[in-house]
Image (tube, rainbow, N blue to C red; front, side, top):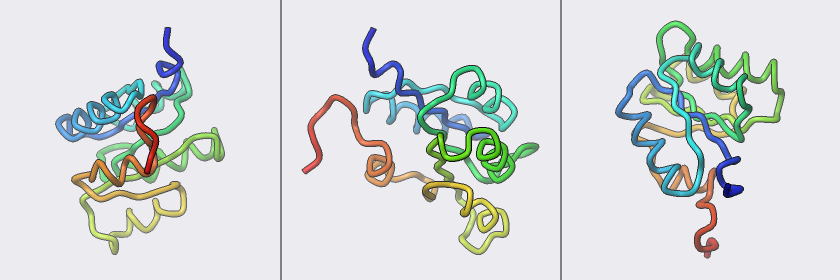
Length: 128
Protein backbone atom coordinates (compact mmCIF):
# COMPACT_ATOMS: atom_id res chain seq x y z
CA UNK A 1 0.00 0.00 0.00
CA UNK A 2 1.34 3.42 -0.98
CA UNK A 3 2.03 6.01 1.69
CA UNK A 4 -0.06 8.41 -0.37
CA UNK A 5 -3.19 6.54 0.69
CA UNK A 6 -2.62 7.89 4.19
CA UNK A 7 -2.82 11.51 3.04
CA UNK A 8 -6.55 12.01 3.36
CA UNK A 9 -8.53 15.09 2.45
CA UNK A 10 -12.24 15.43 3.18
CA UNK A 11 -14.26 17.60 0.78
CA UNK A 12 -17.55 18.90 2.17
CA UNK A 13 -20.10 20.52 -0.11
CA UNK A 14 -23.86 20.17 -0.49
CA UNK A 15 -23.34 20.71 -4.24
CA UNK A 16 -22.41 17.20 -5.43
CA UNK A 17 -20.89 18.43 -8.70
CA UNK A 18 -18.61 20.92 -6.95
CA UNK A 19 -17.51 18.28 -4.42
CA UNK A 20 -16.80 15.78 -7.20
CA UNK A 21 -14.71 18.30 -9.14
CA UNK A 22 -12.54 19.09 -6.09
CA UNK A 23 -12.25 15.40 -5.17
CA UNK A 24 -11.11 14.47 -8.68
CA UNK A 25 -8.48 17.22 -8.73
CA UNK A 26 -7.07 16.15 -5.36
CA UNK A 27 -7.10 12.47 -6.36
CA UNK A 28 -5.23 13.30 -9.56
CA UNK A 29 -2.66 15.07 -7.39
CA UNK A 30 -2.14 11.94 -5.25
CA UNK A 31 -4.46 12.44 -2.29
CA UNK A 32 -6.98 9.96 -0.90
CA UNK A 33 -10.25 11.88 -0.87
CA UNK A 34 -13.48 11.26 0.96
CA UNK A 35 -16.49 13.42 0.20
CA UNK A 36 -19.41 14.48 2.37
CA UNK A 37 -22.58 16.27 1.31
CA UNK A 38 -23.32 17.76 4.74
CA UNK A 39 -21.59 18.97 7.87
CA UNK A 40 -22.99 16.04 9.86
CA UNK A 41 -21.66 13.50 7.35
CA UNK A 42 -18.29 15.25 7.36
CA UNK A 43 -18.05 15.09 11.15
CA UNK A 44 -18.68 11.34 11.03
CA UNK A 45 -16.00 10.78 8.35
CA UNK A 46 -13.46 12.94 10.17
CA UNK A 47 -14.02 11.25 13.53
CA UNK A 48 -13.65 7.79 11.93
CA UNK A 49 -10.26 8.65 10.47
CA UNK A 50 -8.67 12.05 10.96
CA UNK A 51 -7.59 13.52 7.63
CA UNK A 52 -4.72 15.86 6.86
CA UNK A 53 -7.18 18.51 5.78
CA UNK A 54 -10.78 19.47 5.21
CA UNK A 55 -12.14 21.62 2.40
CA UNK A 56 -15.50 22.92 3.52
CA UNK A 57 -18.17 24.93 1.82
CA UNK A 58 -19.20 27.88 3.97
CA UNK A 59 -22.82 28.05 2.83
CA UNK A 60 -24.50 24.70 3.57
CA UNK A 61 -27.86 23.88 5.17
CA UNK A 62 -28.10 22.53 8.74
CA UNK A 63 -24.44 22.48 9.88
CA UNK A 64 -22.84 25.23 7.79
CA UNK A 65 -19.12 25.73 7.17
CA UNK A 66 -18.68 28.06 10.13
CA UNK A 67 -20.32 25.62 12.53
CA UNK A 68 -18.30 22.71 11.12
CA UNK A 69 -15.03 24.64 11.36
CA UNK A 70 -15.82 25.66 14.95
CA UNK A 71 -16.51 22.05 15.97
CA UNK A 72 -13.37 20.80 14.26
CA UNK A 73 -11.21 23.45 15.92
CA UNK A 74 -12.72 22.60 19.32
CA UNK A 75 -11.94 18.92 18.83
CA UNK A 76 -8.65 19.00 16.88
CA UNK A 77 -7.34 22.52 17.57
CA UNK A 78 -4.74 23.19 14.86
CA UNK A 79 -4.12 19.53 13.93
CA UNK A 80 -6.23 19.78 10.76
CA UNK A 81 -5.72 22.04 7.78
CA UNK A 82 -9.10 23.74 7.29
CA UNK A 83 -9.82 25.42 3.97
CA UNK A 84 -13.12 27.22 3.47
CA UNK A 85 -14.55 27.93 0.04
CA UNK A 86 -17.68 29.75 -1.05
CA UNK A 87 -19.48 31.68 -3.70
CA UNK A 88 -20.66 34.20 -1.10
CA UNK A 89 -19.17 37.67 -1.09
CA UNK A 90 -16.44 38.70 1.35
CA UNK A 91 -18.88 40.94 3.20
CA UNK A 92 -21.28 38.09 4.04
CA UNK A 93 -21.56 37.61 7.81
CA UNK A 94 -21.09 33.85 7.48
CA UNK A 95 -17.82 34.37 5.61
CA UNK A 96 -16.58 36.88 8.19
CA UNK A 97 -17.40 34.46 11.04
CA UNK A 98 -15.62 31.57 9.30
CA UNK A 99 -12.38 33.32 8.30
CA UNK A 100 -10.72 33.32 11.75
CA UNK A 101 -11.29 29.56 12.10
CA UNK A 102 -9.70 28.41 8.84
CA UNK A 103 -6.17 28.27 7.48
CA UNK A 104 -7.11 29.55 4.04
CA UNK A 105 -10.07 30.71 2.00
CA UNK A 106 -10.90 30.06 -1.65
CA UNK A 107 -13.59 31.33 -4.03
CA UNK A 108 -15.96 29.13 -6.02
CA UNK A 109 -15.22 27.90 -8.54
CA UNK A 110 -11.98 26.86 -6.88
CA UNK A 111 -8.92 27.62 -9.00
CA UNK A 112 -6.72 24.48 -9.16
CA UNK A 113 -3.56 26.64 -8.96
CA UNK A 114 -4.75 28.19 -5.70
CA UNK A 115 -5.66 24.78 -4.28
CA UNK A 116 -2.24 23.39 -5.24
CA UNK A 117 -0.55 26.17 -3.28
CA UNK A 118 -2.21 24.68 -0.19
CA UNK A 119 -2.13 20.99 -1.11
CA UNK A 120 0.75 20.51 -3.56
CA UNK A 121 0.83 17.59 -5.95
CA UNK A 122 2.22 14.47 -4.31
CA UNK A 123 4.83 12.23 -5.82
CA UNK A 124 5.02 14.27 -8.99
CA UNK A 125 7.37 16.94 -10.10
CA UNK A 126 8.80 19.36 -7.57
CA UNK A 127 7.59 22.97 -7.62
CA UNK A 128 9.65 25.41 -9.67
